[in-house]
Image (cartoon, rainbow, N blue to C red; front, top):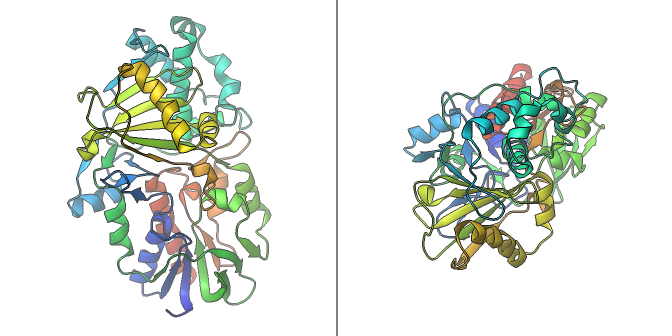
Length: 422
């Protein structure tokens, strides 16, 4: 493995792989440096329960004109579309929710419109007072909390006290259905990585772009290149896990400081047999602690195996992260017993994610924090000295916090490199 390259790409997630493939296709000598021992970054799978399960990003959002969905189709990979109307909702005591569907739909629509007329300093919580009182009166508080959590906090991985109201207007609508890859993102990652020169288990600690060449220090070795594309998560940049020389300019640092990093954690439970209604895709639960085990997805539709996937979002996700595995599973099982009955079989295996405790992620994905401006994403993507470039979902204004946005940002960074390369 040579230490020198035309371009070094830091990170082998979707943004990094997309950038590297585009650059190599253009004739550049590219070296990808990845801290983990596997590809994917926050898009990677575990086979601990048998079938490969995406422990980070799972969904392809808006599959019409989606580059990754198109790539999956070219490879003959199977997907399962998500029907968000296929939901059965339960109260905290396990009884079915009987509130009128029209009232819930109207409340959801009102939540999604909270950004209208908001200032950049307004959080979603600041704007809740603008909800029509009629809608609030029609629904009990526990159901309102559930809808706030699923419509907003689960979507953005952020507490409503931190989430900018303007975040609800950020990005573009994604056309088409949402879908899950039955075999995880792994085959797509492998296809992208196949032609590339990739160093795994190599942690980048500093980048010096002060001279004619960029020097990247990783695992005790210095790698040189004309340009470098940094695709590490926003959380890693916030924690200053990579030092830059010279220091990043004010615009980049302001974007890093003011954009938010949210938290969404998963719990996969494998059971001896399937005890739930296979005609329902999602089981919703109105936990007394907003955001805790709010959604349970029937993953048997994806894998053919008796697996449920539960979510914790925002502050609730942080609270659960401090529990050990056994306490986490028991905490979740208490909810499932409410829904399905006290005589449930114990799970035979589980997978717990703790993205907030992962030093190579420091969170799940980015969100627009109250006080931040959407254009800060563009500022973060701006090249420095035509040598240092950034990519990743946090830099994409059109589809932030998505795999589509990550992939697009990598292509965009590569094109910027090619624009100035000689």
